[in-house]
Image (tube, rainbow, N blue to C red; front, side, top):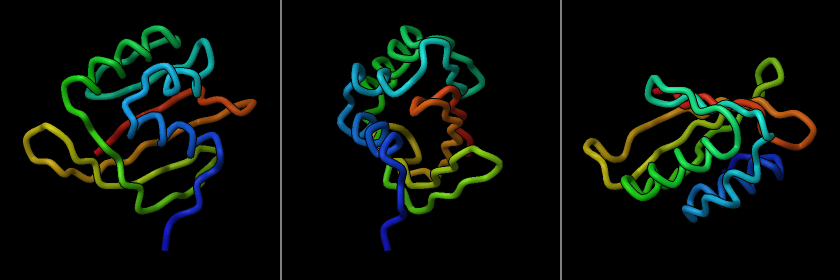
Amino acid sequence: MTPTIPPLLTAWLTAHNAHDAAAFAACFTDDATVRDEGRAHHGRPAIRAWFEEASRRYRAVLAVTDVTEISGEFVLTGSVSGLFEGSPVRLRYVLATEDDKIVALRIVP
């Protein structure tokens, strides 16, 4: 059974898997924060630059296996495959949203 994903997160996931940095960044607020691999990326331009670099290097694709909502945040769990050692890996994407935009994203093992 395919998990139900809200429209904003569907757009985010589609942009992620298509490696479309402009569409990916458009899902975030101007002052959003992404935390990944011990680093924080603040603001839409920084998020776009981070995503462009990560996409170029890893070509990661996320296959979502579970979606939950906990305390107002969405948690997408799935298998991430790409051009990196140990592919595929299981990761969780914790997303906080506000006014139909993502305000925070944490990527955790």
